[in-house]
Image (cartoon, rainbow over all chains, first blue to last red; front, side, top):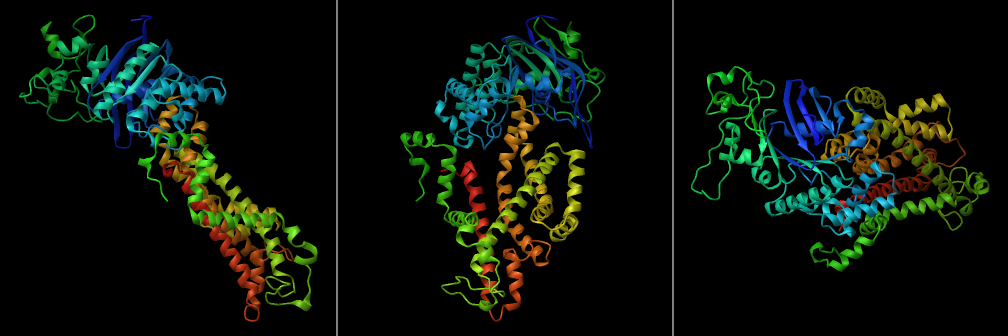
Length: 325
Length: 299
């Protein structure tokens, strides 16, 4: 486990939001690891705790009401949960940075984009404003925007351009880990492809690791090396692209695949997963997916299934697989 | 004529980009005629206030009584006529501009800085801090502004500085509320979180991201408040807690002239009009500035 090659190691992370209406258990004993230079896709439906996990890595969970109750996060050998305020500020943006879902709102509307990128340099490196703005211009060129446009304000850019600016900002200080929280959800399909291509290029250029949060399995197939499927704040299946796509093991993952149209079998009907995610204030005692699972047996409702490895790379948390062994 | 954005050629765009931010704001400001009117009037007032001594001597013209010439109407010699003590009203208005503008601007600065900081802290950190600060502000607000100012002046003694402090502190809660409300609406936006995600500290986020986004309501409020402050000064002078006679102050002139409104209406009409025009210009300027500072309205 103490592999030097592992950049991010999350073990047994639990995050709760303590609200007046009850305790929302957003993340429940979640574990994941990312190797250096690799991309991990974090897949799951809305409310599965993907974004909460990502924000925990940056320690940006709004507190109150959010509390990290259990687990550990180790990033590049440092214990994130024990880090002080100052250390965290230094780390954000230089060691790890994040691309938010909606580029329309993640840029400050009253500052020219060049200045916003320059800010990252000023915060993390001791350089003059002039130098910072020069480098911001270079960064813009890198993501395919003329440096001259650095003087423009965010509303003068299209959505795809804005997301490029956001990427430039995230990569400015050459972070080791880039967290992309549904970076293309707010963009239209043609732009999605461009932005993904750009991210892939830059990732290999800077030799970063990436945590790609998405619910689009197509994007996962395109950019990720490994995939973790999340359900109700827990990883239910983890494996390489091949493991997940070819040897789907968990009924939930299977359900996800049945929910997307297949271009080769157009006549096939989509089989949606019935029902909704369980209420995070009141999780069932057993497997959280059991109420929606068509394979569910009586034992599913009794205890939380442990994660079992199917191969070196592939693990799944389902009682059915346990039985097969 | 409004340029249609679509028709701008690439060359023009490049040229546009080279203009600095200040020129850009100025250019947008110039398009707004009313704002320019306000700016011109306010500039004239400032110039007049600065060169008051060159326009009319304080000791020999503005405060020297000359009972023989009392209550004269406007004439070539006395442009705005004379008051009940035979003093030249024009000269008094010129010197009054100094006091009124200074008190107005300084009082608003005091209110803006204190109220702004308190409001920003309350809005940004929320919770108990917010509650404590805003409840204190509520207590302030429950006392009418003028009464509060009277209290403060009465406690500190009446001098111009105390007057400014009194009016400033009395309008502080309004600023605190406005700044807090704008901070609340801005602080949960994603770009603030994005700023935090690149490692920005709280003070940096407040000063560089939140405050600029809250600027427009603050600017409008500030210009409106300069106007109110001028009026409050006038009211306080009226009950002799403000500027002491014989120093010329617009409000005091208005107040003392009101006894002669039937025989010599110009004594009240002229200072009254001047106060009105000043306040109107300040409001127009404030509105225009707000629009000019908003980059989204850039054409």
